[in-house]
Length: 195
Length: 195
Image (cartoon, rainbow over all chains, first blue to last red; front, side):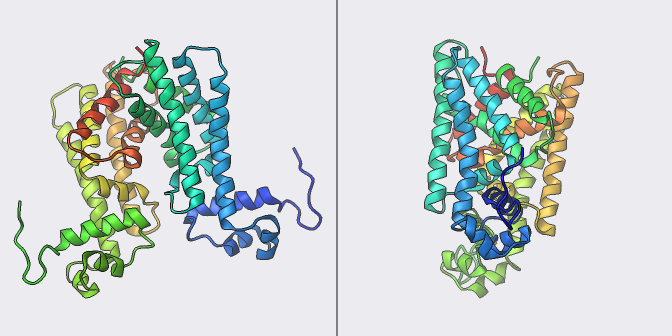
């Protein structure tokens, strides 16, 4: 797929700036990354970067939105499915793995944010909303008798997402890799390791 | 338990400096924390801090060692147990939850380190060694027919530790809380959520 290119700045559109920024945020940290670093990594001037972007915080927000939008699209997909809660839960966990693999660098940025600014606080609020969707599905699946009753739904949700989110620490994106990890997460979380 | 106090600097021994440093590292980040901040948070002078500590990197190393030593003591405990591999694996995962809860601030420091210096690289190497202990237990438990054969042992180990490590993101230390979380992790990971 080729996007129309801007005159004189081939490929250096907003997306290219965002991708370069996110790579640097993950490599050297958000605080340590300057707009100059981002421009330099693209081989363009700082003023060319400001042509596309208002500043570093906009890039952070865009990165986190890419991650969160993917997760909420998955939640929406699952919400509309006419399936028992446990099936919707399992599907949402699988989709979360796929979103994380596909938007790896964006999710990594999201998960490192500590809520130091308003933009970061807003992202943390959306993360908590997503956690609540997962908790609610665990609760429903318990009510339907499909999830063990001796696990607190909020704790179960956090452990499920803890497994999924740990991918940012060790997963190396590669074709087909995400499906295998989604299977593993699903097997461990829903069936358990024990034979 | 009361430790002998130094003349003129009540309570401001190495441990107090370490605890203050670790709190600041987790609140505002390692890079953003100065030796002056650490001294200030204790209400003492910077030179009093240097009386106990060679510098910020020593504090980082001590913090990471507290976390890692706890995990390796658990591994040692389990290595000596005369039990099937699956029981040793489950015990090690439970103990990891307890270590994390007990040394919460130290483990949080450890898990945020990215390997930017030699001290950080060394800690990452020890983390990988611990991962390998868990992987080996999964492998043994599979060979003994007690763990499902369709999960890659290294992936299973990462998912187990992903659940445990996620505690640094959401667990609020409180008496008895760690035992309940250890039960939940064990139930989800070994028996699975599905009834």
